[in-house]
Image (tube, rainbow, N blue to C red; front, side, top):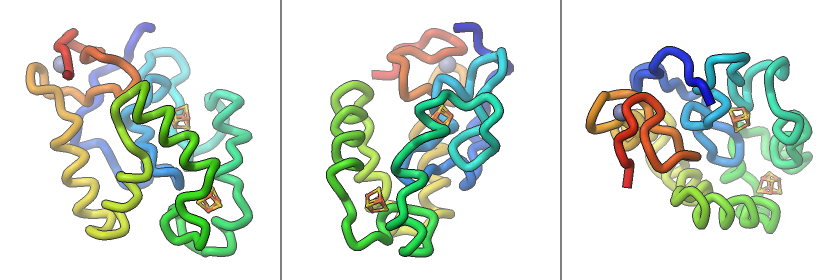
Length: 143
Ligand code: SF4
Ligand code: SF4
Ligand SMILES: [Zn+2]
């Protein structure tokens, strides 16, 4: 994977937070040089198919809740979301459900401020990728 220009924490904007609690600014596809994905809430041009057809993003309950995030749904956290959350916790050591609970409690502005600190590489200052154990820009081990 060839990465593009270093992504900096201050560029992590609230629009990058997907309904499931994923911060798309931490995704490998967002950091790649060639045809980077602009995130779940952006256009579909360079999005992988599984994200274009994502059943969480297009969930009717989300539309009914009239909110941008799953925490507003009466079924939260539903089985579908819990399954994705389990995968992320086990594979990438990040919980989407925990993200959503924090987001609900502290609001998007404070959540984004914390994300900017949490995901900044202590070596080079770039944004860490949740899908990789090492910083994409300097190789620093994020564990
Ligand atoms: S590939 Fe999916 S998870 Fe990654 S940035 Fe794009 S929409 Fe977000
Ligand atoms: S938590 Fe609610 S809105 Fe989100 S995917 Fe599940 S049923 Fe749909
Ligand atoms: Zn780094």
